[in-house]
Length: 249
Length: 303
Image (cartoon, rainbow over the protein chains, first blue to last red):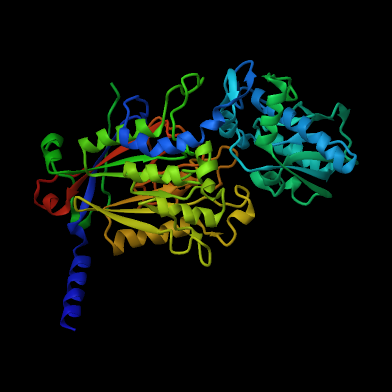
C-alpha cells in the first residue's frame, strides 16, 4: 500500500515537471548520403552467403537483350513496357484461344508492376525476378465498350506509361482521341477481351473498369514465368517505342 | 563540400517563458545532447548492390555498404537511432525464395531500431508476414491499421518510446490505405483508420502523457501526389497535425536531395525526408537538445 502511494507521488511529480525534459535547439542535416563502397563486411557477408548460394541457379542466361530498356524512356509508352506487354499477349492469346475459341483483343498492365531495367546483354532469371517480382497471374476479362472508354480516360488522367499491347490511342487534346484495337477502329457498342493480371482485375492500381467484367478467365499462368519462357524461345529481345499511345496536341 | 544546414528551432510557446540562450553556438553546443537519426525506406529486398552494368545506379546500394556506413556513423555518434519507413520486402529473388528472412535478419544485424509496414509487407499475406517477424529483433510500428483477430494481433506496436542519453524519443508508424494496392485476400481483417485523427491522438499521448522530447512519424503514406493534392500524404500530414518533429516517409520512391522543412497546424517546423528506394541512399539528421533546466539558468535573448 505504502509503495503504491510513493509511486503515485513520483508519477505526479514527474508529470508536473514536464519542463525538466529536453528541448530541440538545433537540427542539422546534409544531403542524403549515397550508399556506395566495396569494403567487405565479413559478418554481414556470412549472413547473406547461404541465401545467395541458393538463388545462384537463377543466374542462368535465358536470352540476350539488344539494348538497355526501361519503363521510363517514353511518355505514355516505354520500350520495356511495350516489349513485356507484347510478349505476354503473344504467350497468352493461344492459351486463351484453346479455352474459348476467341482471340484476346488487347492487353493492359500497370506501370508500377514493372520494376528496374532490362540491361543490354545477357538476361538471367534473376533479372526477370527483379523486373517482375510479383506472383501475379494472367487473367482475361470481357468488358463493354463503355468500360474501354473508362480505361482510355484512366490512361489520359494517370499520364503514365502503363504497358499495353494491341491498343492504340492518339490523344488530340483533353477530349478528342482516336482509338484502335488490334488494328480495327474502336466500337463502343462492342465488348472486348482484355488481358491483364489478377491483381489489376480486382481493382488494383484503381483500374476499376476490370472489376465486374462480363466474363472472367484466370489462365493460371505466372506473368514472369511467361516472360522467361518467351525469352528462352526468342533468344534476342528487342524493344521499341512505336507511338502506340501518344499525344499529338 | 556539402553545405551544412542549421535549422534553428524557434520556440513560439516556450515553457515558463524560456528563450534561447545568448551564448555562442560553439560553446553552447558543448552542453547540447546530440541524437542522430539514420533512415531508409523502400529498400525492396535489395540485398546485393546494383551490378556495374546498371545504367542508372552502377555499384550502388547493398547491405554490406550500408552496414559499413551505419557502423562508421555510429562510431561518430553512438547516440543514434536507425529507422525505416516500410516496403522492406519484395523486389528481388531474396524475397520470392525466403519470404522476408534475409531482409529482417540483416536489418537486425545492422542495428535497426524500428520500421513501419509498407503495402508490400503484405505481398505474401498476413500469416506469412507474422511468421517472418521472428527474424526481426526490432519493432514494426503501425497505429492506423486494426489487427484484431488477425495473425498480426499483438505483434505490431502502435508506437515505441526510445530513451537515448536521457532524451525521450517517441516513434509511431502510419500505413497507406491498402485497398487498390494489395489483393484483398492478402490483408483480410485489417482496417485502415484516418492518419490525421490517429496522429493527433498518438502525438498528444507521446508529448503530454509520456513527455517525449522528440516525436518521429514513420510514414508509408507517400510524399505527395501530383495528380491530386488531396490524397493523404506526408505533406498533408505535416500540415494538418501538431507535435510531429520529423516525418520519415516512403512509398512514392521520392529521391529528396535533403530533408524539406514545412509548417504544422501551430506554424511550427516539421521536417520531412525520404531517400528514394532500393537502399541507394541513407538519410542522416542530427538533433541537438538542450536541457530545459540549464536553459533556465543561462542568459537569454528574445528571438
